[in-house]
Amino acid sequence: MEHKAPKALIDDISEKELKLCLAIMLYREQKISIGQAAKLSDLTLTDFVYELGKHEEAFTNITEEELKELR
Image (tube, rainbow, N blue to C red; front, side, top):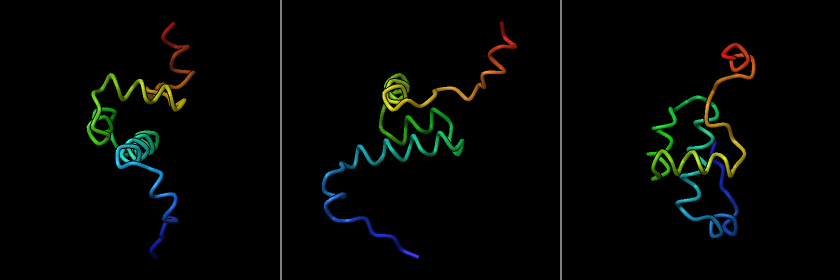
């Protein structure tokens, strides 16, 4: 099954934005590591973590319960 995005949508999104969105999605789903996600999005690790913050995504997979245990 093939899905096609509307041409107007594709024209409005740059390749860089698409790579970043894909990297964030794959990282969120724990399909790739944060380093792999940074590389996929053509960013440094620091810049990728910054982008995660801008997109309100966690940069770590540590749960709140795990953080409480560390205290």
